[in-house]
Length: 420
Image (tube, rainbow, N blue to C red; front, side, top):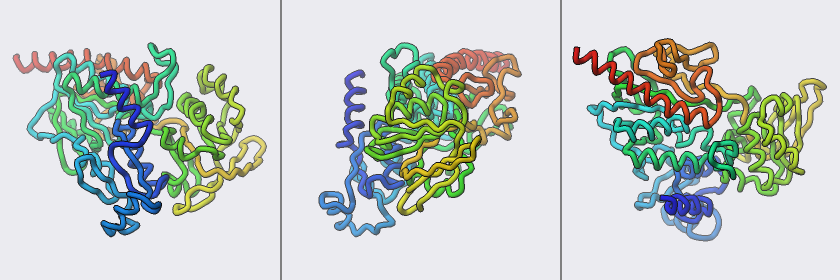
């Protein structure tokens, strides 16, 4: 298993094998598909559709129009034209056939650290488990370049490596994992719980674990959406790092995830502008602050925010203006890459009509006697999506393990009632 994992990580890092992507390197669709494959643990190779070589030859032979790029050559042979992540996953065979007649003991929504921990512990104890996620394994933690304060890894571990190991563990114990599959709503109107999935599919389960985590906030900056995937990113992976080599970039965020991204990106770039509203000591762990202060090419902008973006969708981001909230001063920098890692909003919209949530949208637990159970019997919430949770990877994993004992108690309670 260790040899398999190390070989796979090496292939992903080298980027010279596996699924072939043909298009414009660095374009929004290429980066999207690369990100999905990399975070899903699939090696991939990018060929330039316009440079002399195999990529250009294949495009010319097939007569593909520019708007149909990128092409994806699956390992089994089929060629896809500008596929969605779901279409690519179907070609790779990563989405299992979901039988509407099957009733799972546990349906976990979210494949971040908490959801994967639930899958590992529940499946290892003999429960039938399925994990669903609309994006990829790892959640926000999966995009962390190096987590150095996770117990047992003194030299640190990347979020992708941590998620990949948990993913393999869950599969080893018999859990089913379906990615990318979007859960649109939770139906708790009947005694038996059901999940309504994209495409009109439906999945039934005796218990449901909400582990959908949180997403980075999008600041209210004019034209922001136009640059998403064309200069603006919400995570910092090796893919983005390669695009930024030797350039001047900016990053907004003062939490630990932002700090990890700064430490990871700084060695690749000419200069990194870190934009924060408050002093780092108020929001970031000390070890990361010390690391950042030792980086000669990081410029800190305290009390500032993004005020204006320059460029267009076709050519991408070309400049950013920072606004100091105290002095009112405005600073312009010609950056083509901006990373936004600010705050977190819960991914709980799909359960709003079913379980109780607080004023900020986080799922409330503990009202029914079990600390991780929601206002609906048999529905649990863990990790960042839960109100009052500690926003740390270790805490999320702990809750993912702890919820399994509560699921056992709930299933036993239900079985006793059925006997009576």
